[in-house]
Length: 375
Image (cartoon, rainbow, N blue to C red; front, side, top):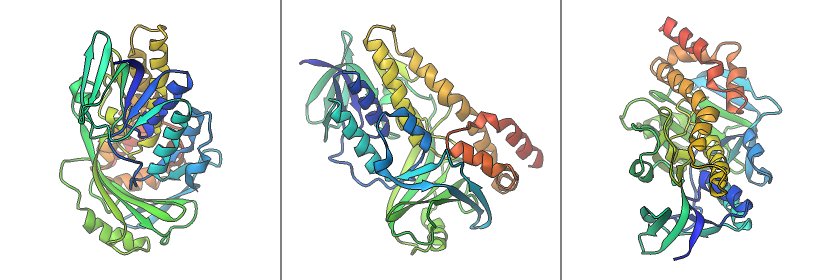
C-alpha cells in the first residue's frame, strides 16, 4: 500500500480548510467522508466576515446574506438593536454550500475526495497511519486530521480534546421564504429557551431558525418553543426541515495533537459556549492545523504541539471567559439580559464579538461582576 502525506477524516468546513492549505503547498492529501454528497445541513450558518482573511480565494459566491443589524429580544419583546460595524459584517451561508465550496477549492489544488468512506479503524504502525473503512478500503498516511464533527469517536480514542465533554442541545430549522425577517438583519431571543437562546438568520430564499440550550442534560422542548417562535417570524409552527443535534462546546484547554495526528473544528470541542459560534473556530483550526502539519512534514518541527498552543492562544483564552459568562448568564438570564444586553455599550460590544474583532476576555470580568452582584 502506497502512503500519502495526510488523510483528513471529514469534508466539513474544518477538514476542507485543512485540505486546501496543505494541497496548495503541494502535499498529497486525501479527504474521506462517510456521506454520499453535500446534503442539506439545517444550522445557523452565521460566520464572522473575518474568516475571509484565512483564504486567498473569495468566499463571496456562497454568501447568502450580509448581516448589518442584530435584533435582540427577551421573550419576543423588549428589543435591543445592534448595528454591526461597516467594515466587520456578519455573514450568513448555507452550511452545505460552504463545505462544498471549500472542498472544491482543495480538490482544485490536488486533494482527493473519497465519499462513502466510513472510518472503522485508525492504527499507527512504524510511523505511518492506516485508516480503514467499513467496506475494507484502506489508506496509509504520515498524518491524520480528525475533522468529523461533534459525533466523532476518535478524539476519545486518542485522548485528544477535553477530558469531560460538554454539549449544547440544538434544534435547527431550514424554512423556505423570508417570513417577517428584514434584509440584512438577524434575530436572537434570550427568553424563550431555558438556559439558552433562539436565533433567526435570513438567507436568499429561506431562513435558518434554531434554538439551543447550554446548561444541563435535559432534552430541549423544541416544538413547544417553536410554536411561539415561528409564528413570531411569520411561519407556521410546523414549517421547515428539522435537525436535532448535540454540539460539543469548549470545555477547557486541552491537548489537540499527538504524534502525527490532530483534531480540528467541532470534533475538537471548539464551539463558543455562549453564542454557539462554530464556523469561525472550525475554519480557523483547520487553517492552523495545516500550518503546523506543513512544518512537521517538512522537518521544521519535531511534533505538532505548536498547533495545540496556537489554538489555546487564538481561541481558547477567549472561550475560557466565554464559558464563565455563559455559566452565569444562562442561570440568571433575565438579569443577564437587563445588565448585559440592554446596557448602552452592549450592542457595540456584541457586534464586535460577532464580527470577530473582540474576544470575551475584553469584557468578561466587568460582565461577570455585574451579573453576580445583581443576582
